Amino acid sequence: VGSTGAAAAAAAAVSPAPATTRDNPWANLPSSASTIHTSTSTDSVKQTEKKRQEPLSTPVLDSFIRPLLSNDTKTASISANKLISSTENNDDTEALKQMESTLTTNNAKPSEDLVESACKAILAQLDKNANMTFGLLLLRLVVLHAPKEKEDDITTTCFSKCVHWVHQQLTANQHTLSPAAKSMAWCTLSNLYAVSHSYLAHQDLDLSVEAAIRDLTTSRVEVRQAAAAFLYNVTLVISNHEKEEMDDVTVSLLCACLDGIGQETDATCQLRRLIVAAKLVKPNKDANVNVTSKSLVTDLGFGDALHDLVAKEVNGNAANGDAAKVKQVAVEFLKILQS
Image (cartoon, rainbow, N blue to C red; front, side):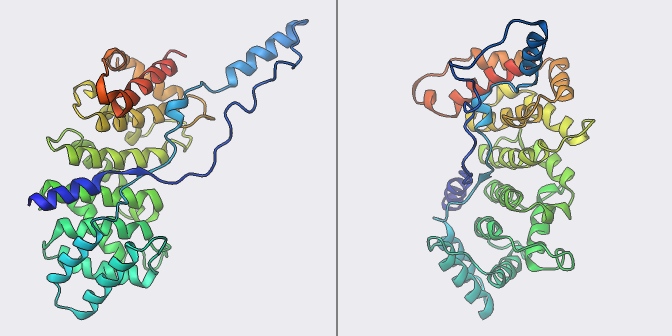
């Protein structure tokens, strides 16, 4: 159990996915030589309107543009070997060996056939409740190579059945997952949502979000971190979809991530929760503030919680880590609320 938990904890560490080069946010500022018109009231009105339309400057919040990925392959070999030791089917054994070799080779990408064969082998053990943590440790890496969605088989392949199994385990009132396995299950859904939305669209995303929200308050920090990573990745997608009215998912995310955020003892969990809420109010550097979301945050009095985060002292090693980023994002979030 100890080695399994340690492996799961190491794998739960997520890193931002590679991003393309962003536009220089300072590129459109006028040079010192630019002519400034102040002679007419019309020019003044235009300048005022332009200022109103310009998005608020929130550089720290805006830097969180990439999904979080649990993509460390250090546990791929031990996970595959553990599954192989319990596998009697020769085809499954060969698929697991090939997948392990591919995942641990730089720049190698498994074929869709290999992904399907490996999922068949993993599913055989998950269905028997055998080696669940090791199976999920490997599955979280496999889903990063999700095959192209095909409407006719998206719910019938072994890949989709693995996704369904994980979704069912996380959303069921009773499940058989240990804390280590549960954190890997959230990493699996989080990774999948970062690369493909269609597979989860065939599940109930609302149920997944509700389950992740419940796990934000569990006593196990590895589960809280993984659940928060899933909510972060979901928010990166849904926050950029303009809606006239807030849906239930948005309301739930805002309330759950800000309620009691000051009592969260883990800085990583705290930061992810804070970014989820802030992104729902201001999705990216080019976006205008979502007035409805902003009003909800203000009306529910969450500004006080943000002030408390800003006032909290950050010392020692934490000054360069997530605790410091919490403070910076909280400052920017308050700036958004006060705009």
